[in-house]
Length: 291
Image 1 (cartoon, rainbow, N blue to C red):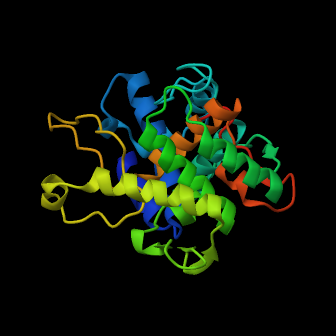
Image 2: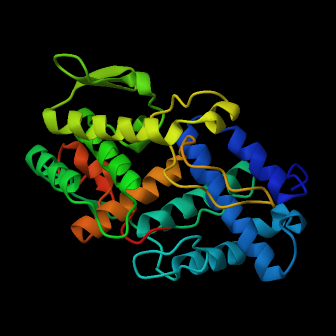
């Protein structure tokens, strides 16, 4: 294994650089970083001391997957608390990540992933009725701005049939709500908006304006043109003050808020893609148990 970099972090960086899709890069890096961090904690050393050979040990990889399955690597509480078991498809994604990484390193593990689980898509009628329900009832314990943003995400999913990865890059200019037939542009295509969706998006746009107003946002890079922004200050990191609300929101922020909205308001978390219509039984369940 002389071609394998001596440190796992270097190998992970080289591996991720070969991946084309942004979503795949984010997912593979997140799981491999989790693996290295878990292994460092087990060995009571820093992540920089973990060699690639350690990561590619099959027994070690299986121990990590087992720990992740129990919820031991979870970074935020799930529906059953901090030790909520990982979703089946999250475990499958972890397995795929280590398998792909090991092949890249010339030492394929070929671990067997669990069989995927699937969830039904809502029918168009169900999706629109659920959107109206979510738009009219703010869940207890959820910030008003977060609720408004999450419902706006659902509205665009219902009207465009697009998932989170396509909706996340949207900008304010992608909404044309004052037209006779309001519309939204998602991934380069324009989609008409019904009255409910237009109202939901207009509400969020007004909240967006309130969150991004003020000199502080201008000093941090000018007006925020991204459609999705944070709704509360982030946690301070590395001794720096907490970033204010109104800055561009990360994909994981939108995903976590969507899970909370559907789980709280509907009693069970729904994937955003389940609101997109289509044939039943073709959506992989990824949010039922969380990561």
